[in-house]
Image 1 (cartoon, rainbow, N blue to C red):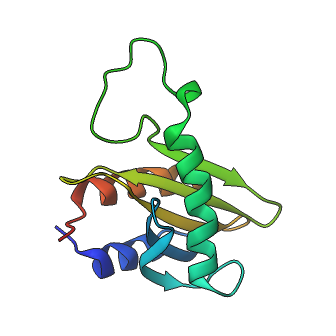
Image 2 (image 1 turned 90 degrees about the horizontal axis):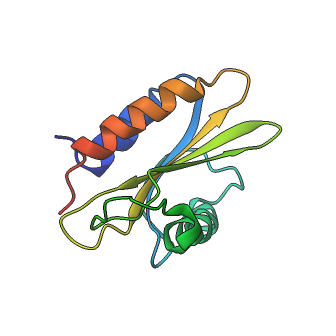
Length: 130
C-alpha cells in the first residue's frame, strides 16, 4: 500500500507522464507533487484543477438515475484534452470525507490515456492516507 510519495512516483512511471499531484479539492491545496507543472507552479495547478474537480463532484447532472450513493463523489475520473496533452483527474475514496484526487498530466504524443486511467484507478484504490 503506497503512501503519497510512492503513489506519485508510480504515477510518473506511466508512459508520457509530465507531472502528478495529489490534491484536496475542497481547499485546492496540493498534498504532494512530482514532476513538472503545466504552468510552472504546482500550487497554481492544484488550485485550478480543484475548481474543475469540485464542479464535477458537486453537480447533480453527473449522477445518473439509479446510481448507488456512496461516501465519495459520483464521478470516478475526469479527462481534459489540450492540444499538447491530457489531464486525468481520478477521485480517491477515503475513510474520511473523500475530498482528494490524483492529477496526472500526460504528453499527448507519448502518453497512453487508457493505460493512465487504469494505473490511476489502481493507485487510487491502493493509496494510504493518514
